[in-house]
Each structure stands twice: as C-alpha cells, then as structure tokens.
Image (cartoon, rainbow, N blue to C red):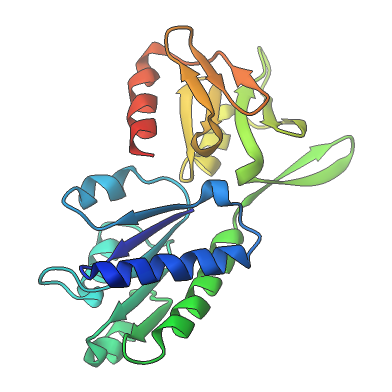
Length: 238
C-alpha cells in the first residue's frame, strides 16, 4: 500500500507518518507492502509509476491547498484511491463535498487532527482491503488468496491455465495471463514476460544477467529482454 503525503510543513509530514504507522500497527495489513511518499520536485513522475493501493493525504503545498490537489488527482484519472484532505482552509469543506471528488474526509488542522486523521486512515484501509483477494478453486474447494501473498504467476505450457505461486503453495486457475494481469496489473504487479507476472513487493533479488527473479523461497526465470528495462526502473523507485 502506498501513502502519498502532500504537505510543505516537514513537522506535519512527520506527524502524518506517525499516525500512519500507528494505524498500521493495529491493522492486519502487512508491513512489507507499506510505502510512504512525500511531495517533491518529481511528484508527477512518482505518482504515474505507482502501482497498487494508494491513499492520498492532501495538505497544503506551495500555492496549492488540499482541495486543489484533490481535484488534480481526480482529473488525472485516479478515482479509486481514498482522498483525505487535511488543511488550514476550513472554508473549502462544503465545496469539497459538493464537488463530486469522492473525498473520504476533510480535516481541519486545528480541530483534533490526530484523532480525525487516525479514524480516516482506518476507513481508508478497509476500503483498500475490499478488493485485495483472488478467489480460486483447488481440489473442489474455494480459496481466497491475498494479493500480498502472491509471489508470481506463470502460464502453463500449451494450456489456458495459470499457476499462482505463493510462499505456502501453488494454485492452478483456469485464467490466462492476460486476464490475470488485467485484474492484478493496477496493483504492485509487473509483467516480466508474456507468460509471467511478478509481485514487485515480494522480490528479494533479481539477477539480470541470468534472468532470475528470486523471492523468499521461490524463483522464476521468465524475464523477457523487452521487459528488463521496465523492471529495473520500477525497482529503482522502491
């Protein structure tokens, strides 16, 4: 899960991080999927390359307030991620909720901000966890596999099946790599080969010379020449 904090006040950025970790410690979301990004000179490039569930905390930066930042995020096409506006400009509150921005909460900094942000982030986690599992059948039983538990997915040779590989086992599903990537690709997954999708957050090491992607106790050799560059760029941003 990615948190993007838009805020010029460094002390307040630190406060936001404290609250994020406080909520995370009381949730069931794994820490290995937690990443926190701050507003900077390359924020547009950073946001475009983010994959996976996101939560935006929109504060005040430069000559923009949280309401204006929220509008830009929605106008750029991200309508799924929870938006929390935390600002000194209380006068925008009514405008915000009537502007069809799908804002989760609008928090005024002078009004018990710690508790209100904690509560809003708790709701944001619940929203993001609603679509965080794949349902697959195995031995006539139905399983829910958390996206965070998936290491990689490989196509079965000469079959319209794929194997989902996790730390604790493998699951054969009657789905193509193309259809699975459409389902997973908007999260922390990358297609390293036409027959393989990897979970970026689970990668332990990549040997680009030998074309090996290593996970905790698994590995795959499926990296195409065309997709090497993209994988390197994504890993450099982590």
